[in-house]
Image (tube, rainbow, N blue to C red; front, side, top):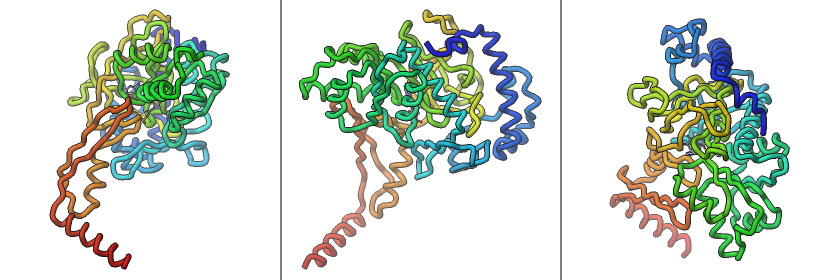
Length: 395
Ligand code: DLL
């Protein structure tokens, strides 16, 4: 297992560490990020007012929109030359949320992913097939660096080319698979077509996340692939995968890396903190990040916090399986999609009315998204004009 110390600290020690890091964080963002200085000043709070973890509620929230308003680098808390990596997640109108990592951020991230893999009882002897996309999305590179940190062997397959992936799983003998849960089932189906029997492969564990999934889907994956299927959570704004991870022992909630991420659950309407066990919106404060630290980031993910002892011996709090979002974001094949993105594309086309229907379905275990639109006469006139022009061009 990896760095069990941080995973098994007594509660008073975790909280003492969190408080020390929270105080430092407030001082740093107040000094380095004009956005936060303004927010502190507006709320009449000074970094020195944070004397206990319960003072967290005095601090302002950060929202996805704040990141967009400060696109691309406005929330960075360190000079740009210290940033060694950029990731981004999709935005509504072309403005992505951009995150920058210092070398230490990358190292801390790798450590939290290595710990996540440790939760799955994966070790340096494992062969880890990473089929999350590599690129601006944090899934591929996040799992990659974590697996390397653990000393395991990484197979950086990335997304797509499904038939080939199935062949690689067989030929390279991966023992662990990292991808979205729906893609795991899609791989299984491709295996069926190619005559590759997953139950005969050395594959034993799956690290699945980046999209919502259910207990019954877990059972289906475990049965079809003959593996243990475990839930991993994360979001690019906060870091990427590895913010929380389920342990193999209990398979009951995802342990948060509490030395790096301070969790709260709030009522999404009033913003009030809710007690452990109550369902609400997950809010995370990053305790170690240098590139783009975030105070009380509203994830919009709905879950609850559990501080009761876990069978595995880890003392870190757990979040339950995510049960939806408090906004209207959709996750299609692991990609975050906002209806507003679709709307702004539609509005660019003359003759298409702003009334539309988004139909989300799942076919062959892959999400599909269909957009039904209303078109006006202008659209047809345009189309006919275009056809006439094309016709003329061909004469
Ligand atoms: O999806 C990071 C990630 C990569 C997590 C690989 C796990 C594995 P984003 O693209 O920023 O980052 O999307 C983050 O995805 O706010 C949730 O709504 C959703 N999500 C992530 N993990 C889970 C999960 C990555 N285990 C958004 N269950 C989050 C349900 C999840 N939803």
